[in-house]
Length: 340
Image (cartoon, rainbow, N blue to C red):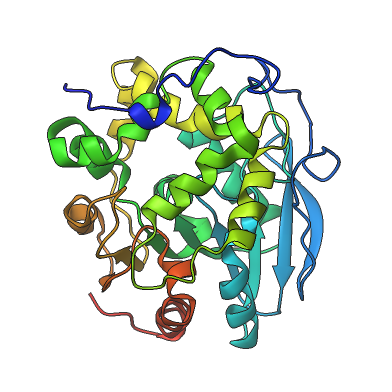
C-alpha cells in the first residue's frame, strides 16, 4: 500500500501554549453547549434539544412535522451544515432533524465508541428515541459512511437512504487501497493516523486548517461558499475541547482496523446488500472523494438506485448548491416509485 503525501497534516512546529494538543482522552459527557470555544445551538427556525441513545446523549436540531428525515454531517462540520435543507424539508412537509455525531458539536464526547458500527447504532438509536418507526437517512461525507452502515445493519429503521460525497464503505476501502489517485486525494486520512499531531494542527491558529480544508474541498461554481462567517462557525465548533480528537477517531479506526479482526468482520458485514431505495449525490469536482470512487457503489444496492452528479460542485453540494440539492432530495423523497 502506497501512502501518499499527507503534508496538510505534517509538522508545523513544536507544541506549546499557542499550539495546544487535544487531551489524550476526551472527558465522558463533555458537551459543546457548555464548553467554551464554539457555537453549537445556533438560533434559527429550528429548536434544539438532547436525546439519549446507545449509552450517550446527542444534540439535535429539529424543524417541521411529517415523516422523519435524519441528517448526518461529515468532517469537519456539525449539524449546522444542513441549515438550508432543514427549512426546505420542513416546508415540504417533513420532520427534519439534524444530529451532532458522537464527539462533535453538542453531543457527548465519550472515551470510546468511534467505530462505524457503533456510530451507526447511535444513528438508529436516535431514530428510536425520537419515537419514529423509521427515517429517511441523509448523510454527507462521514455521515454518508454511517448512513450506508446503518442501512445494512438496521434496514427496518431506514425508510430511504441518501448519501452525498461518500462511496459505499467497501468501495471506499478498495479505492483507498488500490486507486492511487483516490489514495492521494484522501491523504488527510493517512495523516490522521499519527498520534497527537493531527489534533494539534486542527486547533492551531484558531483552527485555521478547518477553514483551509473547506475552502480547498469546495468547487469553483459558487464563489460565495464558503464565506468568512461560515468558516468562522466551523472553526469555532472544532475548537470546543476534545472535538478535534473525537472527529479524527473514526478515520483512525477505518485505517488501523483494516488488518484487524474487527475491521475484517466489518468489511464482511458490509457485503450484505442495501435493500432500501437509495439516492447517491456527488459533486463532479470533488477533490477529496473522486467521482469514479463513488460511482461504483450501486453494485451494493439491491433496490432502486439513483445516481446524480452536480456539475461544477465540489465536496459540499448541499452547501455549494443548496437549492439544487434540496430540490433533488425532496423530489426523490416524495417519489412513490424511485427509479433505478
